[in-house]
Amino acid sequence: MNATMEEIENRAKAFASARDELIERANTLREEQEAIKRRRLQGIKNSLDRVIAAREELHAAVKANPELFDKPKTRILHGVRVGWMKQRGKLTVADEAACIAALRRLFGDEAEAYIKTTDKLVIAALQNLPGADLKKVGATITEDVDAVMIKPVDDAIDKLIAALTGDVELEAEAQRA
Image 1 (cartoon, rainbow, N blue to C red):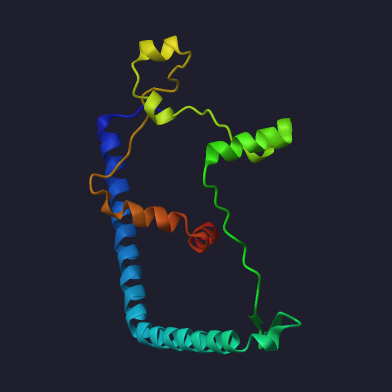
Image 2: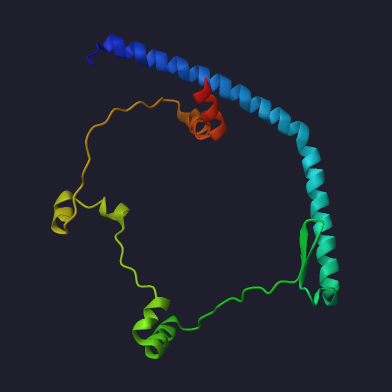
């Protein structure tokens, strides 16, 4: 499709206009969300405070009465599991090298199931090497071609646009339209 610079300019103008409309509507949505949040926030904070207080009271009651949970160790009361649960212990190794040597001595080849050995390239660092050095180590840069770029100069709204285009409900609504 061949186009003149004037046609490209007209298309850029249409893109900018459509984007401005989206920004205006997204800002309206954000303002309405903030208004709703301001109206509901105090009630949510109050409920959160009550949940925290009730949880602390329940925790204290269970902790003070472990004998009530000998058998079974937990119970479900009003949809809440309460009681005691064995916690996973924390594994500590004083000397990692000595532990690895002991594992190899005790388990032989099977010790590798407990030992992680990793050699992995750091791609971000390799990308900074000159092309000649990359060639020497057997690496190449591919797909380094010019590509079309469309990027608004004022990218402050781009995060919102990305969030909106990632919104499943919004995408479904857009597909219905």
